[in-house]
Image 1 (tube, rainbow, N blue to C red):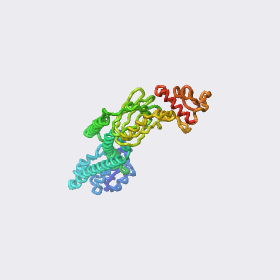
Image 2: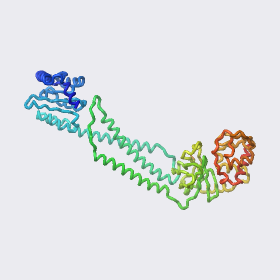
Image 3: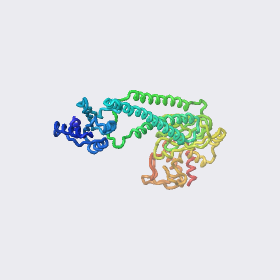
Image 4: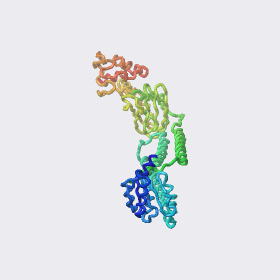
Length: 475
Ligand code: CUA
């Protein structure tokens, strides 16, 4: 409502005929005195545009019969100009008392053809020229935009696929399970890059090609929904996701395929070490040693918090949970040395919860089994083996370095001071108590509760004696 009022106030007249302009000015002032202000009279199209820009009239009255004014220019300017301007095309010829009013806010770009034919009805000899003004341009412009957008989408997709393929995000695979997993990666790279390109390509093209032109303050064309488009962009992602699910399931079934001949290894994780028990061979080790080309079934359990078994070259990954066995099947297909890492935040030393992994030929594996089961007679040598196998050395250094627990270097026979101020000589009796009940007395400067409290279940008396003998050898 307020719009209509303001529209009628500031008027610009465009005509090169003085009579038309003067007569109209007087007419306006007489009829609506006080309500209207004639800002000026312009006699050419160029002048008119300059005046429109500077004076910002609400209404422009154009002398429709004036041959010197370019109607097409007016029309084009009208379509591009800001929302408030109205144009009145006034004709003094037959039927000239009927003015044509155009309000650009009500007219979409698609109606420009209709408009043009209205314009040209008054001068039929010009109609041929006018119809060729917009229609073919719109169509060839559309085609140009499609070609541009598709080109950009293909360019981004190609760049994405090549980039992702060469990104070397994965280590060299070393297991049969890695083959389908790497295959899935390649397929997903292509799908991801294509979808990314489709979305960002169209978006980027629109941002560049349809950006606001300089000086254009008009509103965008208002679009009310598009059913075809909405159905397409619902169905397409749905099919894509279902496709991913089917492909992923088939792929996963390949990864977890069991071999009844698999060798079993029990994996025990605890803060912050790994232990591997081989029930068939009767071996406990702190290194995971595996024969090549034979499936191994890892039965895994945690003694405290959640840990996660991960050797990147094997690709597969599995959490270790306290109180519940989880399983993982790996068939190493390449000999070599790898590193097992913990892939689940499990406390202050999480980052250092690693263990060596060795994949050996069958013959080398047999030799390793033989070496492990053939224990030395020397208790000190045996103690060192136990200290390695049961993860003691993850927290106790042999060279005086301060780790989570006190270093074993020079420990035996030394005077140990506790957090409560008491002290005691570190003899065999004290060391045995400390292994079996680590929280009874905490050495000054160290934290309680960090050492596992289950060594009475894990270690035999002889093993504890061997470990004490090994510590004694370090004084
Ligand atoms: Cu164990 Cu992180």
